Image (cartoon, rainbow, N blue to C red; front, side, top):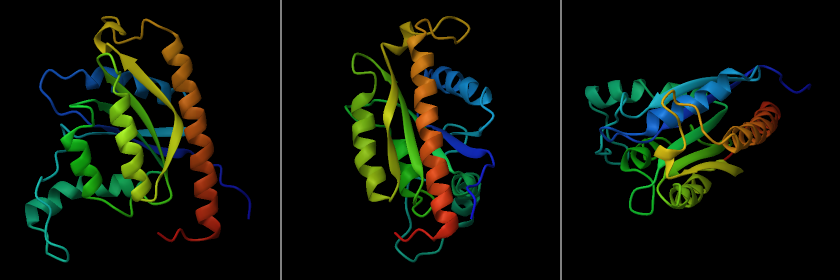
Length: 198
């Protein structure tokens, strides 16, 4: 069977919900890179705009109508994605509660798919959040991409228009998306031949 060549669906998950947050600047910058690619289509899932309930039901329990409605805004989009990019700040040496909540509400949506990371923050640039996410996503049968993009002292790395002031970040974004595309095609092609078993 020949490899599939259809565009990859990439869900960009913006993990910050803090007021006055910097995340939209980073997310918009990444989205502009995805828009330039012919092999990828982006679907931005901003957890501030699509918040999920914070109380998980008992195993096997029924979802309330409100919970189901909130999940219906996110879950099908994750299921349809061939790959993911998490855009995350760092809080207390880790990633955000809304991002963990979104991860925990889902399971099979992550299986056999690649995940890339764009992080931002102070001196660490959010890299400790990324290292925690790698372990979590391995548990959920996802493949994490080695390359990352991180913005140290992020608020000093963009101009007023939202463009980066250091072109090395644009180069890093291309490398990250190239690697994500390779893994997304490889895993999608493999799953077309044999179902992924978690």
